[in-house]
Amino acid sequence: MNRIQNQPINDSDSIYRKESNLLSSPPIAMLQTFAPPPTLISGMHMLTRFLDVWLYFNPTNCIMTTCALIHSVNHIWSLVMHLAACHEASITVEEDDPIYTHVMAWLTAHVSTSRLQARTAKGGQFCIDDPASMEEYAAATKNGIFNLIEYQKALRPKYEIHLGEHNFQFQGRSFWIRRGAEDYFRPDTAPRQFTVDKNEYIRISCWGKSTIPIQEFLQETKRLYLDQEGTKIPIFKAVHGVWGSRWKCAIVRHARHIDNISLDKSVKTPILNDVREFLKPTAAKWYANRGIPYRRGYLFHGPPGTGKTSFTLALAGTFGLPIYNLSLGDPTITEEKLLQYFAELPRRCILLIEDIDTVAISKKRDSEGCQRNNNNNPQNNNISLSGLLNAIDGIISHEGRILVMTTNHPEHLDPALTRHGRVDLKIYFGLATREQISSLFINMYSRDYDEDDAGGEKRDLFREKITAAAETFTGFLPTGKFSPAEIQGFLTLRKNSYLKAVMEVEQWGRDTLAAREVNEAAITIL
Ligand SMILES: Nc1ncnc2c1ncn2[C@@H]1O[C@H](COP(=O)(O)OP(=O)(O)OP(=O)(O)O)[C@@H](O)[C@H]1O
Image (cartoon, rainbow, N blue to C red; front, side, top):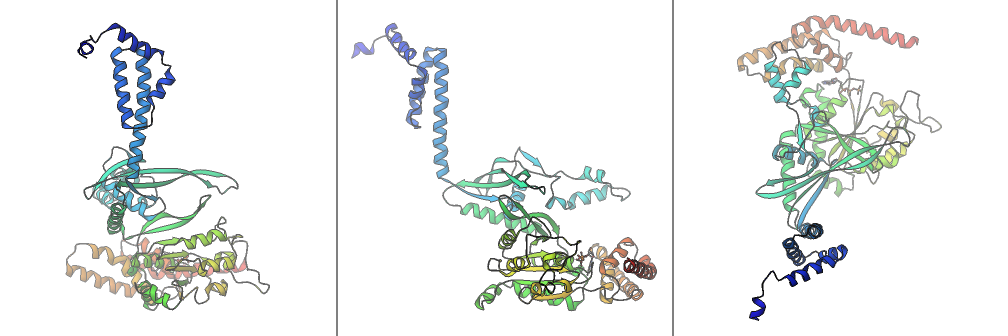
């Protein structure tokens, strides 16, 4: 025993034996030796072998052993990752889900990362002016004239976190996200042609087997987003591709205050009351108990520029509802897709179909049962009237939605489309009454003054003056002759001087009516 222990380490025989053993092993066999099942023990074993080889400093052995070591570390790493995945909870959010916007807004504000992506040119919420930059620019401009280049100098570029992995802390807990994008083929307008597009997603993860911490995080991002951006309305458009049809947020707009819509109380109040009643928390149960489908339909009809679309936006703002805008004239929409769009509506939203009379399918049938059409109307041969009716109130149609259809010609619509149950209220938006003309005037001139920090007395005096001027202004215009859009156009051109508006309105009214008569005569002759 002692003899063996005292044997010198650099015994040439033993060195030779070790070296010849190593050199005689073929590389594959060596790799096999070094690639046992991925366990920690095998990793340790290889480390010992590596050091062993290193001691003898043979370059070939070193390279081979390093390769084997890397291979083995890979195995160990996959094992660790596998174990980690078993203890990782995650939630994936797709780009078309509103939660995606909430999470992105939170991450952009709270995650500091060295990898950012510029988003200045992107649409959606970035279309809205940044009020801070605009105010900064307004204060800096000497002459008050807007210049886009100068404004862009003041505008802070928008960034958001880049695709890839990022870590963050939320309420003292570690989370990590993967923001990724998958390619998909989007059909072009040209037949059988496709464009490659990207579909983004975010996967949020944390340690543990429960997704509750992630759900809490998502709840918080939604709350913060709605606190800050709740006054804006997301407007969704239908998009379609080979992956299916879905709604995508096309733009976010500032909600228009309902008071800014000049409508007679007899028009405004019944709709507001009806929507309020429909959205009551107890309403869904009331409908269910009576077996009545929980949905509501309105037909807004009247001449162009009377506020049908603006009022819909204001309704959405008042009740915090998103708008889903569907264009039936789109030739790529089939009945199947239409059903899918209706089925995918969220529980409370406004589904807006504008100018429904311009789509051939919604038109009255003639005596032979054919739909009336003329060549100017957009044709969509993929949808029949029964397909549309089925989508509106069929079994698959979603509950809780408010359907708003607008038209200039309700008399052209097929009665089946507007029968009770599909359309619950038909509201006429007429040309401006005295009350509307006056409120358009007051709305144009008093608002900025109200917002100013002017003293109460001064403000009251100004309001009195404006109210008196509105009376005079209204007296110069015949009622029921001009659309609110026309009057708003006239006032906007004179927005800096209400006195100028009062002085010029009579002449403008006469000229406009005369020009209209000439146009109508020209159309009759044609
Ligand atoms: N009643 C109104 N009160 C305030 N503004 C109005 C009103 N009606 C129209 N306007 C203004 O006129 C413009 C056009 O209005 P809007 O698009 O809502 O009309 P519409 O009835 O939907 O027209 P169309 O039938 O051509 O679609 C908007 O800028 C809006 O501000």
